Image (cartoon, rainbow, N blue to C red; front, top):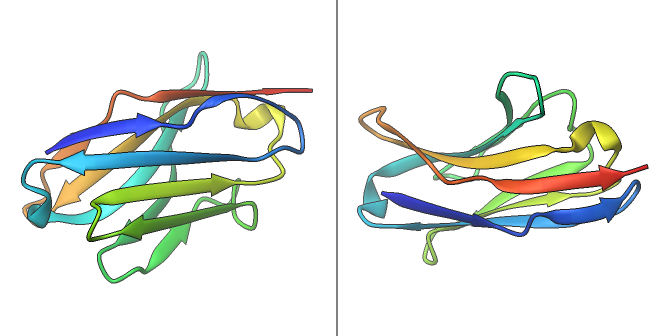
Length: 115
């Protein structure tokens, strides 16, 4: 499975961004899609996940501001982020977890929120 993340950029505080993650390869094996992020000097942290049935989970830090979704026929996942703050500045990585528990990572997309 290969993952290609896109949609990052520079936005002012209070703004919005939508990240996309396109999967290719043996996508039938993917059960769970997820987004993680890593801010400078910090460890990578989980943001949100969605399973093939559409059930979602969110980190407390983004709950209410972020919506994860997926288009199964297009093998694409999205992360709609609203009301962004400088604390959301990070490299965002998409992740796919197969039924076998094998985990795949995309290359990351930079999100920068200016105050």
